[in-house]
Amino acid sequence: MDYSKQRQKSVHRKKLYENLNEMPFYIEEFVEYKELHDASPSTLLNYVYDFRVFFNWLLSEQ
Image (cartoon, rainbow, N blue to C red; front, side, top):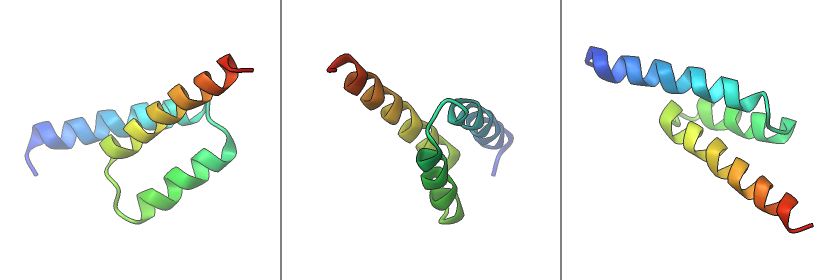
């Protein structure tokens, strides 16, 4: 793997864990499960972003 891809994975992994702090425990468990089954940090970060959008939508619909 070249340096730029490795760096991108590292940056995405860092952002992923920063964003996970704001998520419910079951989202953290989901991400941990997916990580063990070879999901990339970029994919997982996008999942977390999508969950955030969904949860914000849910809250706005109350």
